Image (tube, rainbow, N blue to C red):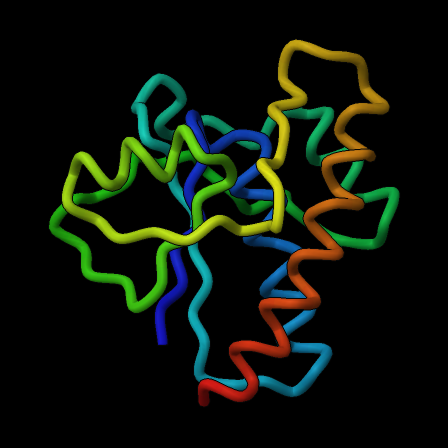
Length: 140
């Protein structure tokens, strides 16, 4: 199974969610799930994760150092596409890509805020990732 997580530029929310979901799936012993992330726009293609996002991950024991931003590939066919907010979901829908929200509420973009916003977003991502681990465990 291939899960693709999508935000705007693929340097904050979606890569954080990718790292967290991948780690939580491994910790739960759920095999056979590939987790990747991308952005609806290509502004940051090839860039590393935002340093504030990477720092928030490190503070919680995750490693996002290998991440490089990429744009969503409309020709790809992931089994499950998870959007970080309703705007991303709408954009993907215009591409003809059915997507679900990653969390029960939109995950806010911390990019223009203070550093603590990344920690708040990470807490929301961790909670939502736990739900996806349960769903993916039973789907397999």
